[in-house]
Length: 90
Image (cartoon, rainbow, N blue to C red; front, side, top):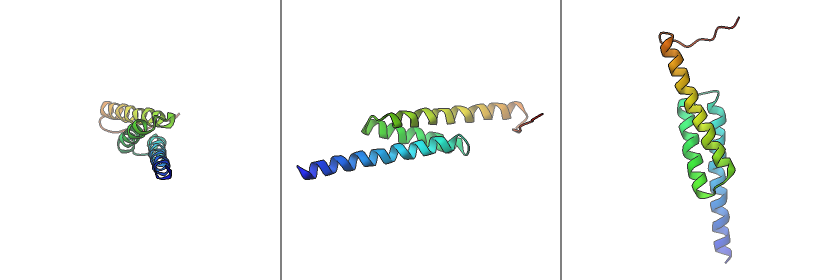
């Protein structure tokens, strides 16, 4: 019985690690490299959701989708501005 409880604990910690990795990718992807970190957050979140069904995994998927949508919006704005993306304040 002790070996099965150890393997269950190992599964949970591994899935939690994936959920944390997805959360970090999703948050950092809002600021830097959303085209890479967004899909990674979705993948890590989906695997963690399948293994544990945790709320953090759902947040990973949501943040990953937001990263991807943000990148698509940035591409559209850049395409309409002749291939450049700049902020004009004031």
